[in-house]
Length: 436
Image (cartoon, rainbow, N blue to C red):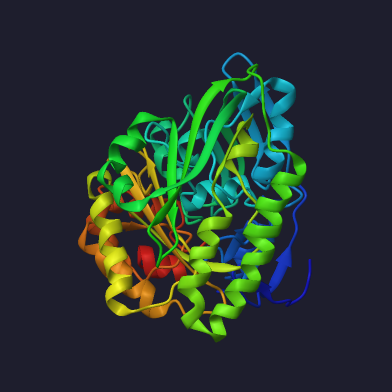
């Protein structure tokens, strides 16, 4: 146990001084700590890597660090299923799966999160035939408010899995997660700049034509930086980026030089359009073939804040176009790019893609800049289009406005009342988005 140290998330948007910090080394110890917190009338929350921008993991009572609960529990080779302890970090998963010739089917572009944190917040990648990371979950074990273990998989409590696989941390403390993996594969990656207007006219067709497609747009430019990934068998020949080339592109330019430019832009906003045009020319023109995880994920060391909205896929071109026009109309100087991705429909109760094919629009600001006016205006557009905010990224929505965009919202609340009637796992963020 540690004393009242201050916990902050990666983006520095949230901070809390918990009553105490605990680092359990076993599932039994998690059970004991939950019972102890409940008996003392203290809320208890598990935190992962702190990569959520919202207060979803803020723990004002007992904060659980699950770093010691990491690694493989068991492997079902026949079905390609791997059970991991909940504190396992995503960047460790490829090493853990490699001996079995397996890989996760899809990933987001950041791999610093714990597996429990990634699925609980709805972390996702891109691909019109692929869901978020939580759709890979075929089994979970969590500690409920009374300190007991609840297992949901295809043999027991199966009906609960669509809620527990993406539970916002509101239903219990995840301690084990079973993933449906696939044979290891490689990706043929093509990253190149393209005229933005031409891309927008065929956006949905482009996304549907390949395995994985996304683009970035630096405001004040006319170019989209597109990323197209095509899946190849695991024994395909690879042509990875040369180490120096990767370092120059991903470390020196995308992080080092860009950090300096963003800092300058905060004191001299007038230079931002020029900076963005320079960034446009410096990044995004390369082709390579590499292991899936080496292509999906990138290093992000420039600190930023983010809001991301999920809209019905058919609304994606409109959503992006309206944000683009908004920036122009308001005369803002936005240094960080807008990211556009897609995902398949799924059946998870609180997934942003629940029941509908989905397009994502993510807006960012450098962490030294105030995102308030920009994010509020973008949120108004996305709300009008039926948008759902990413649970781990900044937004201002509450339970009354979210109920109407999630068909299973009340089902989730009823399950929460059943599993955690005393709100042992509650915090201010969950009160806002789910109600008391």
